[in-house]
Length: 281
Ligand SMILES: [Zn+2]
Ligand SMILES: [Zn+2]
Image: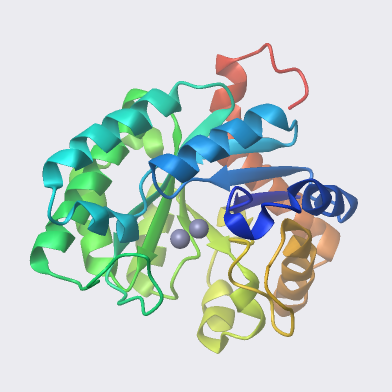
């Protein structure tokens, strides 16, 4: 299996990352994509991936953290430049996570957090700029959307390029018909997380997704499968796979094989041809 979305560089894993990776490998998770959320965590993701064989990195600025630039939009361009510097580093397979987010977070490091028109416009600008970076550097694209389907699709429609087909994922996808239709039309993968174990709307939604578009992710340390305690870890990908196989009434091994192939196509096929020095893919 491949955990297509984890934040192993976050503080929750500061003292346990080696052990957590060991347990993931034991649970059958062969590769993990460590996803950045701002310049700092993107840099950490790259450092971790370059140190540990089974890890790969994604770099980008999460829409929530665009709030940092609410009063200093000129700094955003500097940060986007730093993201671009990171893209060319070894073992970076994708831009992400990037996208749109209208959720009013209660627990956030950003003071006076609110969704203003200016903030949404900045999110759109950063999202579009980062899609362009993915295109320019031929990287895969990890899209985060929360409560902002219209804006997400608007930016995607304006900036879409056929070369992103089969290289893009709606991570932790909301159960929304419009997202599914767009995903089917443009061959975008759909990420399934631990919340599938209790979210009834997602359980119905996942039955409508073609198998060849499904990928698995933990979003660890967040999105725990039901009954587990913080922090979530990549080893729990197995719980998601087993639950999903039962829900879809298919053999767990078939599901694992199909989602593995999907994840390989999503992140590694292009990377493979680019860098044939990596023999172990
Ligand atoms: Zn996300
Ligand atoms: Zn995430």
